[in-house]
Length: 247
Image (cartoon, rainbow, N blue to C red):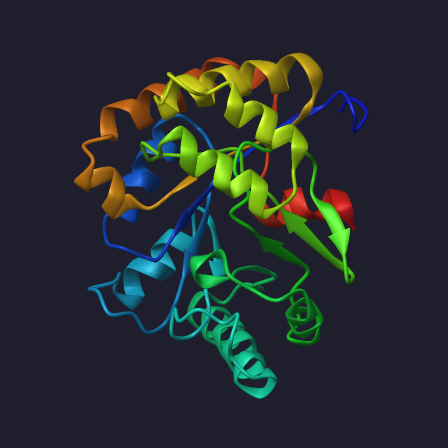
């Protein structure tokens, strides 16, 4: 493998455990790609059956998305710790595999909650930072994993707000260049090429129900095919494997 700064790592992640996640899994398998699926135990929507989650875990990584998929940014410490620990235990009992990566529901959290993740046994946390091709960074002993592009037709304003929220000048500059070009697939293709050229981490993510609602399956498959066409130039990793580069 090449050095860290010149390597191109590629990962994907998929949130919420909708039954349509199984279609995403089939697409990833079709193109020989990796993926991490973040699943909560209790949801307000029909979710995958336990046997489907077990089958999914035999092919891909399953990460924690809390027990109840409620935002934790305003939850007290004891409730947060219970959600983190309980979800990890549930996934490990269900799949028979270690669970060391977490994604906060809605992407919302307080910085002091990162120490609770560490106490609950996690090593990495995926965020919803858009437009990033950065490597994960170590914070509070955890690897924080940003994302590059979501399989969803966001407006340029949404990208700009995301960058401003995180005080990311690099991402804000990229968002500024987006005005007039709202096609997430085109954005993903451009950022993949930049990562191939300059090194970094390319992270595609999304929600299967949104892909269905927005009729984005064709676009998603096109981007997966583009990634697959460059497999000899990248290292495919799960989210937890990506996080290990910061630890």
